[in-house]
Length: 545
Ligand code: C2O
Ligand code: CU
Ligand code: CU
Image (cartoon, rainbow, N blue to C red):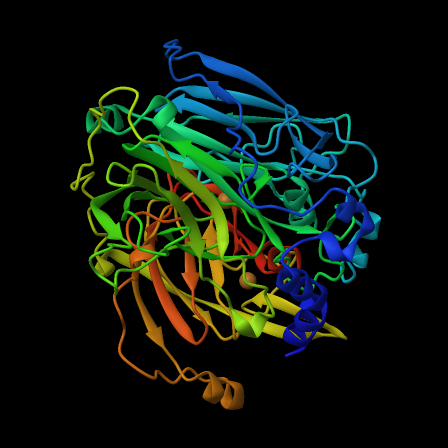
């Protein structure tokens, strides 16, 4: 388990950092800036590009997004430091479109020739590629990707089709999907972790009539929360992992680009669009009173990666101690409603207890603060629906093929790698589903940690999770089941494009491949795993000549 040992040693300064609770003792620089306080910066809201009101149906709107470097301050007491982002912002602007409204984005690489972060050890085989390269993927989008050679016209963001400073990627998004939250981020082969950590993320919302009809909190009462683990050195500069075998957990968490921000809210309902844009860190969240630690309001989850749930999930029900937390792995999204109306005058902490002790991750129990004001500006007329959009279950017997994808840790020379079915990104394609057909994929996690597994183009449903004996597997390479199949967890229900596959578990998912034939990608969304070849191409094949 070389992965773990490396992680522990690397995490040591980070743990010290956490125990000291402040940057101060580690650096005269930050010491001079005073104590590093939490909840002193207001939550920033990324700029919004709302195209959903332009009813030029049939036309394709054009949008230019420049990808560049700029200076930003992540906290009141930190000096500005370099960030990457879109149109001068990280997270980039929230793009909002209406369902069916076509959008063409010109992603222009205007980055400098040098990266913010050094190339991590283990990726030296990538030295032949330019250090600064990016390709943008709209995560969760249904787009056509017929070929993989064209760097200019690239809709899905093929990992090898990166562009260098001065070049442009043109992507067309039909947006022919029901209301949901997508997100755009870098996807450059063997540089995604570094580029995303540098700031290349942004939210993208599709709206539809059904959503309108639900009368959810909107306008100022609908707020994106984009969580990113970040790593800060004692001098206030940022770090990224120096060895790709170490997942990048960071030692702080930023929301919308600020560390430990606060948000002033009215005592009423809000809708939060939450995205975990962290490289490797998962969060399990609830709301508690900052001073008394009493339970805060419930988190009502109305949507997930693929849009609305069929029924609202009540998480962190204050009346039920067994009620699950809001659990988000990298790349997962949650659409939630929180009703602050009974909490006027309180300071509510968004608290996290997710920690994988084996991974040497330092805990980050505090994410952000909601300061609930004494009264509303105007009466809250929005709704909290308990029934949402029906989700027809895909019948398992309609699957024409069952494939097994084994998530495994392998020794390659003197390097540890995370692979899928023992294959690298550049190995020939092995999954060729036929357009329009349904398949079951059995995701077999033979490693000792959770992997958030993602497939491009399709949404899937989780059928079940079944534990197997990891020790046995280590001895004989056989899957010996250690219990019965369990139904999906609360964070696995609804339409998903990312699923948490727990160690020693077979998670079965079902999906129909379409509506386009072509080349797509599936991978682990821990970005250091993805960069180290836990990513594979697949091809949807048309049954017609
Ligand atoms: Cu969020 Cu292939 O990516
Ligand atoms: Cu994706
Ligand atoms: Cu992984």
